Amino acid sequence: IDDIPVIFTYIFDQPAAFGLPKPNVTGVTRRSYAADIWALANKMLGAKTVALMSKKSASMEGVRKYLFAGADKLEAASGVRFKEMYLLDTFEEWEQTVNNFSEDFIYLADTSRILKDGRELTRAETVSWTVANSKKPVIAATENDTKAGALYAIVTSEKAMGINAAEIGKKILDGTSPADIKYVQSQTGKLVVNMKTAQQY
Image (cartoon, rainbow, N blue to C red; front, side):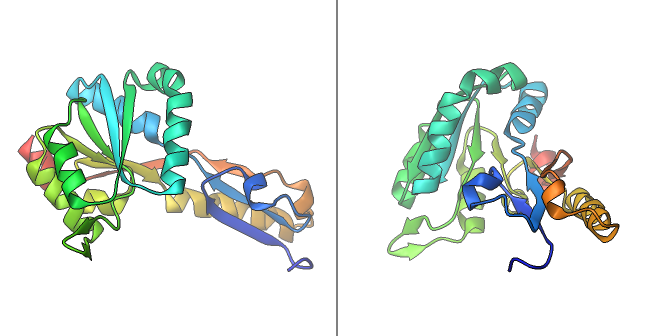
């Protein structure tokens, strides 16, 4: 589609990674709230170190490299040192990692597709087991993992992103070419808390 304006939202990367820009395409990217989430853990829990737990995949291996490369900046922004990102396939690996976890809190990344007895666990099953069995606080990167039991997450505000997209749309309707509109990064997050887990603290 090259002849009508397109406004994207919710892309979690630089637009160039998707073959953009194109003259008719503009939009809103979302940012990572990891530093904000970790800073809150530092403030509330006194946490100084973190490790991530995730399903093993090529994309999560990329995230792991990114986190090691940016560990100093993340620590400066949050007061929390990134130590490791455990990339796991099976529930047995997941269980062993939870039981031997040495950092101050678990930060959940991709909780999908963990295999137990030949069956893929749902994200909710993996998260609720982790929260019930971890000796360390469990904090999420997603709203769904928070609903499943993780203490809290800070996630992209869909409302704020919608407002950003609407503002771009208004400029286009007022005559501005999409090619002349720079991409916008949504800067507004929302805090989601699992009150049942919070009450246990």
